[in-house]
Image 1 (cartoon, protein in one colour):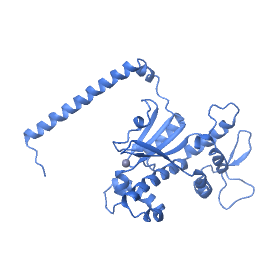
Image 2 (spheres, protein in one colour; image 1 turned 180 degrees about the horizontal axis):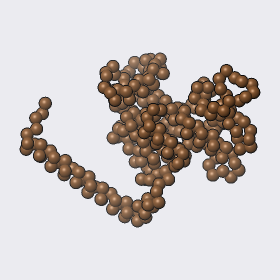
Image 3 (cartoon, protein in one colour; image 1 turned 120 degrees about the vertical axis):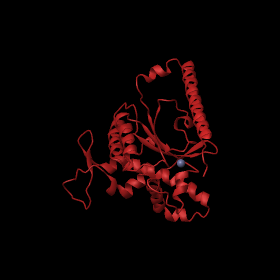
Length: 280
Ligand SMILES: [Zn+2]
């Protein structure tokens, strides 16, 4: 163990103060640069913010949300945690999604994972990382369980890590799609999109899966088959529990009404909502 003498301790504190001073100086320089580039930049921020993108990414310092997609401050609503998880019992993440979808009415939700993710790598080891971290990593271990056959078949450890990073992103996109707030908004905006002259001709929010390569700085889009998910699992996850009275089915049929008062199964509406160009 390194023992700090009184002198070295004072020296460390002094260095820390110097470091913080330089951060604040850098902040002032940045603010001045932004004002020089656009004198109205901070004036605009007095009005509040109206981002069109919700970003859910990893806390990894190499994956900065705004910078890597070239978006300025004010345009991306950001949530980050270890391994970009969307956990239904995480009030923090659920609150962010609710606010982004209900209040900000974001048009896109991007889940961005990254290769060489420490959280994913940790979940691939048989080590107890102790609570609460191990509890968090358990979610990634559960994703492994869902795709065990595919992952076990990859003998190269790095290849297996990379594939689990991708599957983890896809799984989190499905977790977003399961939420009541997203299902409800997509159904609402599906009907809005059908209106003549609609500003946005597709259902929102559109959910995108990205994976980022820290060694090149490039992100790629992963395919998420929401339609297959709806076909296979809607009996479990559909959330509009207005049961159809005639023709009872073994499981509750989830019905909603369109703007003309016609009843439709929420799964049919959500499936149609995926045919818009925004989901391509
Ligand atoms: Zn990570």
